Length: 389
Image (cartoon, rainbow, N blue to C red; front, side, top):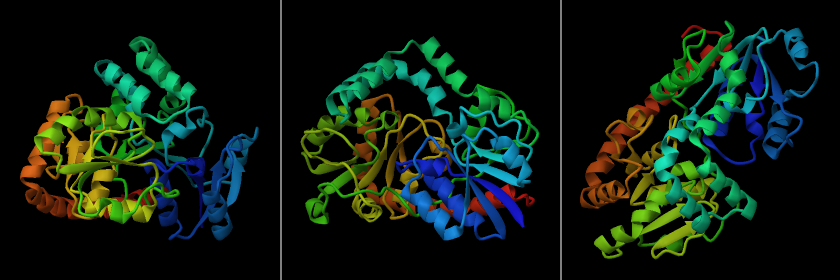
């Protein structure tokens, strides 16, 4: 029976994110095999309800990475493979003394690329933070300082964060996995060549989205409304600032026929904008199904789940034309530049003129992407367990 050390640090995240859902999906797929799983967690972070449920149900032995003899303990267990779902969660740990096979997923290096696009967007992002983001005062100050940080110092700071990861990928027992060709070459660009070939596997469909209590949402409130949907609007790199900058002009051009639904902790009193701070998985599905179109103005994505989640319900998308998005989505969405509000305006107008054409393209492309996701899920589990690709 194979012994697998599994990344529970990523499962300790208390907010729902694509990387955590990805890691959880891999965990359940590995359980379909005859394996003994040990969970590596961080004793400085509380163990949440998700981990308590999993450890009890599957009798997982937890190991604290903060234990002073941790690497000796792991080597003595004769672990076959150690799976890490998000490379960045292990930035502060030097794992080079481990002898087992290490499969480490790096979904993207967007924080490193952020330095290149933050300059032209800094002022509009600062205004967005000050006016719209619902954050504590000290967090607002931190965001604004971050956007004003000198570029040279910013890059130096970020590179320092990746020094352990850069060292680890030079080890013969370390294998890097990522979600797209874009991310593969970004890793090579920023960190240099790895010892082993970087494998590209599409991120699997998660079947679980955003959870949390409902805030001011009912199906009736959106009944008979044609709305554009945006999610995670309180995350700066999702670029909601650009969307809001052009929204009033779009409304004027379409005689206020359309609404927008913004999911996230945002302060917004703009006409025809509906803000929902939190939604359950079921409510998010409802929003996807009934949206006129989904908008994804993100600056950078290593894969980008939301347009695919919308596509599952034949909802067409309008997406940024940067990083991995054209690679993953192909000809499915209408693309625009995330740096020009007038280009997003163009894309939204185009969607109003010929939506059914993009609905049909979305249906076809979703089947193609989903088939690749299923195939690659099997491949990455085989890769972790040591089977041939």
